[in-house]
Amino acid sequence: MKKLWWLVGAVVIVVIAVLVGPWFYGQFIAEDDAPAASVSTEGAEAATGSVDGQWTVTPGQGSNQTAAGYTVHEILNGASVTVVGSTGDVTGTATVEGEKLTAGEVTVQVATIATDQSRRDNQFRGNVMDTGTFPTGTFTVDSPVDLSGLPADGSVGTVSAQGTLTLKGQSRPVTVDIDVLRSGDDLIASGSIPVTWTDFGVTPPSLGFVTVDGNGTVDFLVSFARS
Image 1 (cartoon, rainbow, N blue to C red):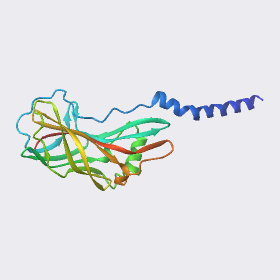
Image 2: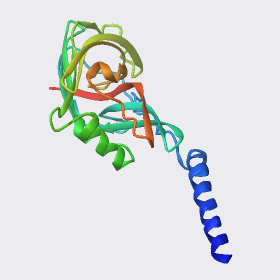
Image 3: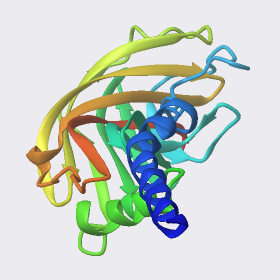
Image 4: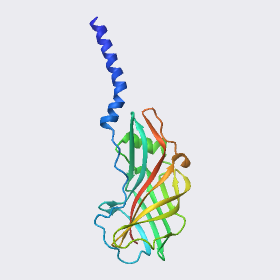
């Protein structure tokens, strides 16, 4: 009889763990990630010189360190969370002539994008993005962008850019609003590009313990210095 009660108790504990575990995780463990980095005016200075010239992506400094990645919503172990992955492994150039951005390209090493979960990152690099075959993502400016209205007093202005986003070897036209800060002799820009993952041949994971939304954003904060 004692053995029977022990077995019944063990079954009850397992059932409770299965039913309550996801709720407990969602209520007390799971948290949304901090939002993707965006232009900060902390420590900003008035712009020096003209915005015209050749510009190169730099690591940045302070709150404006160069980073790029993604934001998605997922259900993980029953909890609804917002996930942000990022990397500082970003390169690129820009050309400004007559106060217009006439050319620009930013390249991200996708394999180095990381979150706080190594299991998620392994799935991202392998089954999701196949970074062994498609190691980079790029954004290229397709049409001139007027920068003449950007403030020169250390505050942020916003411009709209038409470009091409390439992920997993698939290229699509996109439009993005970009916040831009001219601080001293630096140019800092950030934005989020809305994407439908299947447009780029990316299948959002649905593995039982995790389900990822079909839409998200590609995010960037890029610091430029004169070449």
